[in-house]
Image (cartoon, rainbow, N blue to C red; front, side, top):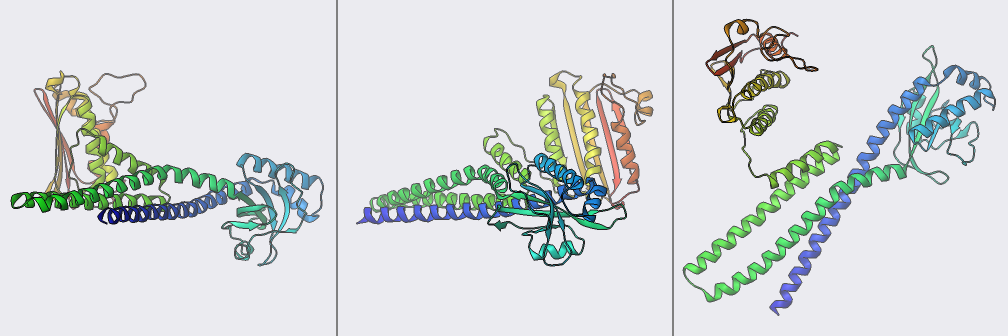
Length: 442
């Protein structure tokens, strides 16, 4: 009886998990397809605008004066067919829109072997988009079901003559096959991860059920401290499962959100970051309120580590939001790069780097200290000038701009930058008022 119940629980749990996974995959597919349609429609609209701007308008105007097959018709038709071939579109054609309800195709660039579309033939552009075009506005549709040409979406842009008057529209059809192909590629990128996590959760769920059964059997045979021990182990396991479910849910939500807003590069970066987190041997977390600063310092920390430089970082719990993130990164990036380069001139055991970012007493202070060759007083007077460098000039490499940029940015915020070099230790210090304007004059 108990075995039958256990099997039933496992089957039901597996079924529910499978159903949940399939539902998630379906929702992801629908979301990805919708996002792909919107993205392709937007790109197609931009393409239509570009083609409309470069179209031989004078020849098209001559055709419109007498809309029949002739030299002008053939010239425009060849142009549209060439555009269709280069863009991989289903159809490229011109539209006449003289009322807010119906559009008519005038000249069409069709695939080889396709039946020629009659001049003035009625098109399938929905009335909503026809109204937009009638008012001179560009348009794009959703997927259109056409019994003759299949499923596709359309985007159109106005064709204007030399006087700026709209004389027609340039329309492009993109086949549903192309949209489906792109959607499938995106879905495949996330499918393996979804399936893996689903199988992993199923494995944990099954293991949990078996361990729970083992626990119940042992609990009947043991008393006293053994009972408390198993109870603690069970609670610990339950906590782990809850934590895994929570993390899994968060990761899926983040990935789903990124894919939904079409941030495919960020989704890939997120998955890459997760993979590195799992496989990393050493990880030192820098607690920073400013994410841009955190990324920069972590990058420089890894760079210093690769060069065998002993690096220490001290960062206040402050967003440093008086300074634009781009300016903050320029200041610290140049100072740290100079410090690392100077340290490399010493034996590895003598290479040291210290970075301090502090906030207090109405000011921000950024200090970068490194071991390396001493900078003499003559060089210190010129070191902030554009093009001046204490290092040897290398072919193809521009030098002498880093500290010049640091001084320029610091001055815009009403701050100061100083350099001190004693023996084999050099320290660069930037002090900026915390109450400085957020948009300094350029």
